[in-house]
Length: 548
Image (cartoon, rainbow, N blue to C red):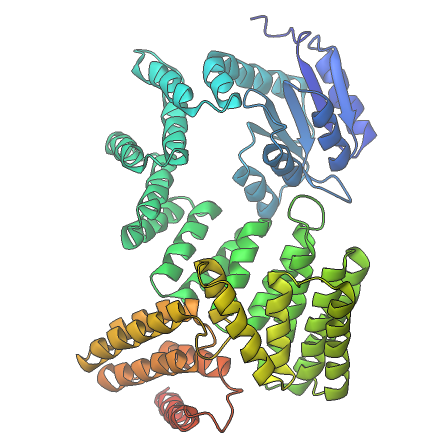
């Protein structure tokens, strides 16, 4: 191949500065490139790729308003607009760690810093094109969706005596085996690679396989080893957080994701995961903080949805309900109301308006504005009646939550029981229903709680207090509002501290669980137990302070 002849290649330059477009275009023309298209923003770039297939794409990281470079790459992949054989090069003037790590996480073919020299441009293109051409049969199979053929072509390179691309083919084969759910062969591949050389991609791949095989503890250790070796691997942090949640330690999972967010916070899916884990932990301010990032990151592109904004308003409302600081509660509730106003302007559709009114009713309730809360609830009910349609699942769940918060507990319970009957054969919906209430409404949920309590009590009676904590912590993921399970966690911690001595961290964890149920009614049968534990924690906390 003539290294300086690119006359048969189609190029796309994506940059919001026309001056840089011209510079890069001139450099490419110096390499005999003739077919060069330019785009000034992410939307134009996606449209260009819908209309034509490109061999090489240069994309700036910061494209001004709209999609950024990472989101362009994500959109192209999501919509199958990027051929496996296409070279995608991220070009940027950004030098901050957040930007660099965020860019590399999306795995472009190359990464170049501005200003770009003719020599660097030529060198990168030669390297990328040589590899793409050498592996063209694999890329064709990938573009055709024929993963088995791609694996066979990878094997040809792996088995060749002097293959320059053996590691790439091993890595690709491992990823394809995982995609095809052939986890044992993938595990064997990664273990064989690691036995020869401690390659990071094999370490991370093995962690993914162990997680897929539901070997949670080994997977956690593998993910930990991966992010210890490479602190920039946000994928490893996310994997470890998922395993910690499964193993019953969502608080450690939250800390880990918050730590990874300091490295880079540009992933919508990771921020959504952080929202979910914060909610398990009863940390609604943390959920709102991550939710703000979700709304901002998803403003343009495939992740944009009214659900993001409604979830943010809901978490702000929950945070307002769960704080003892009146000023803070007012600030959070008002932000929720402001978010809802913006949501109704951004998104059309009756369901969005109804759901917005339901969250609004809870926001007013958090401020003890009972009249406004009831008015918002009635407005939502009227809109549902006027629409004459059965509300969707989310709307029904929002309605149940609003009934609870505005003093209509009987209506809430009746609605949830009706939904539990309608969806008794759908475990996913049943699980969502049980997350809303102090006690599960589905038969599956009721049976699960009986087993959880039986197992936890058995551990507790044997003096295995940490095992009991772990058991109940796993349960709280499924039943985050279950008062008894929260109290069982606290009781197990209290007895553990009685046996092994008080710990500031354990007291803090107990206080977090107590905070999650602080609005318990005095009429609740668990209330005396709650007060007893609160007194015990206050005593322990004072004792610990006296020792410091």
